[in-house]
Structures are given as C-alpha cells and as structure tokens.
Image 1 (cartoon, one colour):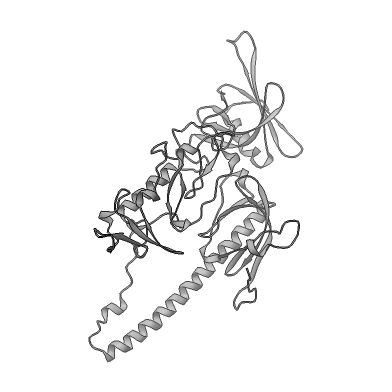
Image 2: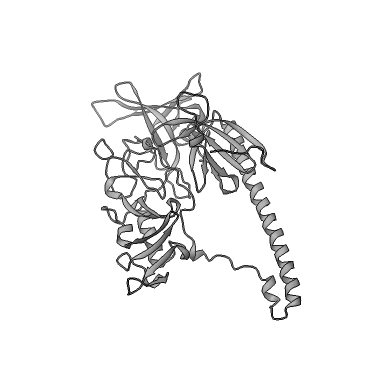
Length: 410
C-alpha cells in the first residue's frame, strides 16, 4: 500500500538489507526505519523493486526487540509486534547492534511522545471538567483528580504479540516433553500459532488465539490448556466481544464467567468481520497427546541449566568426515552432541573425565579440539578420541571451559 514519507514529524532513522529467517530458509528483506514506523519490504520476483502488496508497516511504539545471549546468534535479532514478528540476520554483530539500538530508541521516543500527548489531553480535559464543576455544584470534585484504576493482573491475557516460529531445522523431534515423535516425511512438523514451537500431529490442538483475531487455530498442548483455562475463567475474550445465549434461543446475556464451559451454551462472538454464533466445543479441540508441557528452551538461562558451554560444532566421525551438531558440555563432564539445537536427547554422548585436551587453531579463527583418553581396560583399542571443530565466534568460550575441566596438553 501507499506510505507518505513526508508526513509531518516523520524522520528517517535507519535503513538496510537484512536476511529474514523463515521456517525453512533465509530470505532477503529491506528494512526502513522511520521515527514512527518500521517498513519491512519484500522484493518483487525477479526485480530489485519492492512489492507494494507485501509491505508491512509496523508502528515503532508497538515493537519489541530481542536478542539471544549466545555467540552463534550474535548477528541475529527479533522484531516482535502484534502484526508481524520475525528473526532478522545482519552481516555483522556491529550492524545487528546498530539496528537494535535504533529500533529501541525509536520505540522509547514514540512511547514518550504518546504519553506526553495523553498527559496534555488529560490535563485539558480536567481543566474543562473543573470549570464545569464550579458552575455545576452537583459534580464531585474528588472524582476529577482520581487516577484510573490499573488493570488487574488476573485479567492479563497472553498472546499480545505475533509469535516467532522456531525454524524447522532446529528440532528433529516434537518439542513437547514426554512426546518422542521423530519428524519425518510421514510425521510432518507443525507450528503452534500462539508460541511458535514445533510440534507433531498428535500434539496439535485447536483453540481461539487472541493475536489471530480469536480464530480457532493450531496450538500446542501447553498453550491449548492455558487458553482453555482463560476461556473457562471468562477472561479470554474481551467482554464487548462475547454474548451468551440464554435459556431462550432468542435471548442473549453479557459474559458471565461462571457459565462459560466448552460443553456449555452457545455464544455469539463479535469478530472483526461480523458476529457469529459459535458452539464452544467447536472452538476447542484437545490434542490427542494429552496435557503435555514444552521442553525447556536450551538458550534460556535461569540458573538451573547443567550445561556450561554449548553451540554449533562439526563433529568428526570415525570414518573421517564432519557432521553438523549442537554440542553441549556439562559440569558433570558429559559432552553431548545433538542433531539439532532444541533436541533433548543426544545423538552422541561421551563422559570425558580424565581426558587430555589438545587444540589446533585454523587461519579462519576456528578451533579443532581433540579429546584423547588412553583406555587401560579395553583390549580392542588402546585409546578413545573425540575430534570436533568450533567456529571462531565461540572458540574462546569452548577453549576456556575445556582447559579448566580437562588435562590440557598445550
């Protein structure tokens, strides 16, 4: 659609080409940051011109910017908003940091500006009300100066922002704890529309998701039961959106949380495109796998994680070729290699207490680590050797950790 770059007060802050991480691959995008709006532009097929139909316009005061505190994601940042959320990859960490800084500053500036306008508007309204109260003695002056009551935390509804989908290549199995389904050509990958996690067909339920205009869409088991609980408490839908049919088919009443149930009365929901009569049981379909919870995000740090270093590595097999793995090393001397970052079961597992460490640094800054153990109890082989390569961005952390835990052969 059209966009007026000369709108009063609108300033150009930053622009540049980035890669957007989709569920399957990387795609080129051009981002243009104005003081009040972020434009996410997509190139037309076979052209260097932007496609005006697929242009996303996001108000800067509705944007959240996140980064992962990990060396393997030093060029990546997340733009999260109610309308569109995506992961973007810059050419360098410095370029990423500039984008994060400019986006954060634009968000803060617009929120402060909006708050000042709101405060000025409220002040003018209060002055007008005070003048009216002087002329009308029946108005209580104390109500003029009382602050509005803040929204209670019990009425908080999750799902205010579009979820960033976990890419397909970050998991080889379903991400629900207790589900061991391995993805394959037959067992396809699905994404929860509420949180973006990868799940299998048995773990797919359906429920009304706020960010999807309360349409009933795919959700994971954890999100399903959280949304179901909000519905039964009467706080999933805003009160103005929902009416419950009374005993008579033609009578309707306002929302009554004590009467809301999946097996309860029909409800009328005022969607953006018009109101519809719905059966609650048609809005919700429980996942076949039952009430499962998501596994822990391997990149989230809460002080309980057992791994002290992790990241992308290339593991050398016994046949001499290298395979991509996500490596993790724990305080208990467990060195685990996973097929994908979010997997919770390692493909290769080693207990490396007493191993000797040697290191070779390559010209590109990557390090090759060789862990050697002379086995005195096995007669068929005299030593066990583990060789893996770590990229330059995370080599220092791996080196410091392994030198501290193993016997270093410098």
